Length: 304
Length: 312
Image (cartoon, rainbow over all chains, first blue to last red; front, side, top):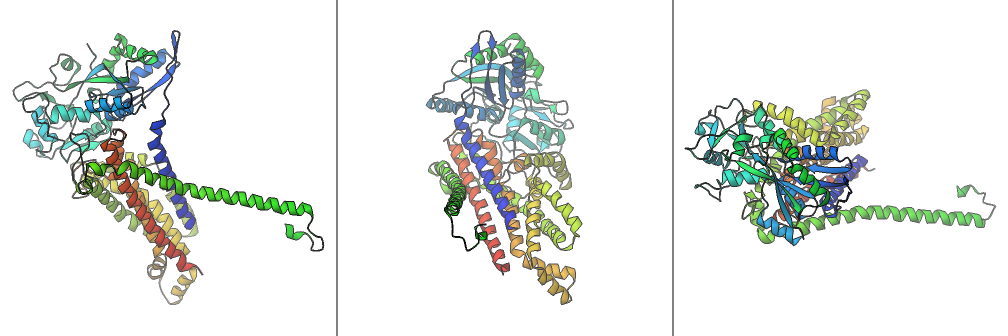
């Protein structure tokens, strides 16, 4: 019995050890080599950041690696905040973000000797989705704001069934979380803007966009705000009205391009100083006509 | 081996050298083991030092009272507020649900395996239980998300199946193997004479289990429960996926909530080194560490008692 316990304890210690290593590890991340020899590109770099941009970046990275077999790109999408933190800590080559870097974060980066350089690679319409059986089909930004800050908790208050609203959000790692808070919950750019508004305490914070969408698909009373690329046919996107008098606009590539859809945002790449070498080659590809064609295929909005 | 040399022959130079080498080898092994033992202590102290160094500075910004009893956690707002009460209560709820399920089931299962089950059943069931312990927590999270959360939602008529209750049920499945395996060992460590004596006095099997075996192994069972609870408190991935992650202080286990481990996991990626959020998350880690440490210490003390009881 005692050996059993000792075994368990050892397992605990091992776990703790691994946890510390994981915490310490980002500090000693290697600087990737970005050599380009002649016209044959080779080398490796990593892209960390937004969960929203990840599907797009993955397609670009795959295509780019197909064209240049000696290039290795690692893409991960824990969230824009995580990507920007990685950029500041010097542990990523490109940070993908679905929100702009804050001035405070620029200061932190500069203190670490990093010069954030911003490149817009695409645009995203942030769709608001509900269960297909939900009778509500359009909401104003002000209504979304009160739903998400917890002032109303029942669908009948916005013309739906008599059922509690299950408001779902991404966690604080996410750029979508911050963008939605500023532009919808706090109603940035509208006359009713109120910077003191926050997500209500009943809002569910989920670790990934996929999990939010799957909860909406299962739950008739749920509401969530995934990027356009994540919307499936099993969830119903709502038409968004900027104010009570303006017409409801459904999210789509066309409405985001012509500016009529109110909750659209830039998808950005940040690098340390202007990109060079292999990273520049990759970003040039993303911005090229072939690269922008992929944007539409994945479900986002190309630059023009 | 050296004793086999006949007493008549005196120790030759060769034997002396052999003996010296043997002693040297012994020294080497001894110091090696000593170093290995010290290493774990160094690692532990290092972790404590790191947690203190990174976590304590938050109290310069947020007073301890506001930190421990504050109910608002908005790390990315201006200005940020850090109150960990919702996470603390969520951890309590989830652990409570997990314990309430895994302790009765686990102890009864252990009693069955140790006292009632024929050897053949025991030998097949025990490895199966140990396999349950080996299922990765992310897989448990998946199962909770896909299978259990719709069930919980319809059974309790909830708004969402992502709740502390769902997380607690998944955690109980994860701490069951520990509780069963350790308490079964404790029950089997109760000397057979006790049982024989009980039977001789005319006790039935049930009476023997209830009044002799379980009280005899009580300290071992308590230790098993403590270890299971420690597992439930520290588990992260499963609760991150199924607990729902709402920031309100949960009043009932059926609400969505965010336990401390999930709060750390969902925030650390976003935290800039040395920033306020980073410090606050480390401080949560420190609180969590203190909780699991005290649970393990209690388990240790109780086990010590059990060992003394049966040392003859």
